[in-house]
Amino acid sequence: MKILHTADLHLNEQASERWDALVELVNLGRKYQVSALVIAGDLFDQDVAAETMRNKLRSIIGSSEFQTILLPGNHDHKAYRSGLYFGENVSVIHSWEEPVRLGELVFWGLPYERISKDRLVGRLREMALRMQAEEKNILLFHGELLDAYFSRQDMGNEGELRYMPAKLSYFEPLPLQYVLAGHFHSRYASWQIPGGGLFIYPGSPVAVTRKETGRRMANLLVTGEAPVEINLDSFHFERITVTLDPFTAKDPLIDLDHKLDYLHPAAKVLLTVEGLFNGFALGMNEKELALKISEKAGQLCAGEPVLDFLDVRYVLEDDLFKKFMARLDQTDYPPKIREQAKELALQAFRGVK
Image (tube, rainbow, N blue to C red):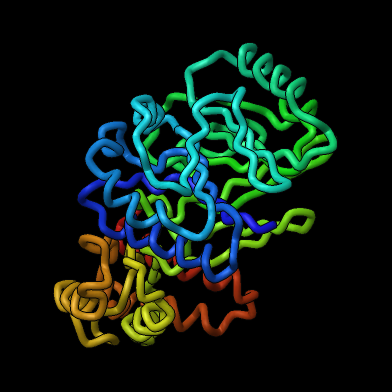
């Protein structure tokens, strides 16, 4: 059986690109003929969103050819308490005691709640007693894997709170094939669970914050086989940095053009242009370079680019500096040493300590 696994769409009324990502996931489910689409928490950005958007959601996932299985996350765990109807082929895991059975697969879930580490460990042990080792058990989990050592920014805009923090060893007693997780936004990642099975974060399928850069992924599983990362065509951010070199006449705009040529159509750029340049060699001053960058990047940028550059033409054209460079060129220092000497001399002539 095939499963498409995602999490952390954070749907709301304003972000149309998140709805587009959901539609793309449903279409991928049809393309790969999956038995289930698993959304491991934070389908909605807020609890109230489920009340106002369930009709729209029902039209997208409610009548699909496969089952959609939803797990409440920390952003939307209260959204499902009123028993809202999301469609005939949609199942919500309301309780850790009540799995969803789909053919040969048994989907267990840990709906988000604020519990201590000891209580979480105890809950997992209780689940282990209810599971049958001969069955194909899959656990849905929305929380923080402590073994992963990721930073707070990998969780989106979650602040400093920890949400159901767990270690891989906590899942060892459970007879599991997979833990399909959510809450870790930045990228696709997987870990081996001691004793067997895989713990998998698919990353968010669409960029929710600017911290989520790079092409977004979904997780495609065929039971008994290795998981497959599926590239999505959803909205995301790409970070591009152009570093200027004052000792070359190479046009930095050509470098920028080259990098923009490889940009995905659904991406927005987080652009930084940094370093020092020779305005005489390039034939432009700082203002003119800034305008050229704006013309090149234009609508591709997510907000204003970071312009952290300086024109040092007057240092480079200084007679004393030219004499120093000429003497340096006559030495037999290794290239790395010569480059370091150039940088130190430039700093000294600019009066930078």
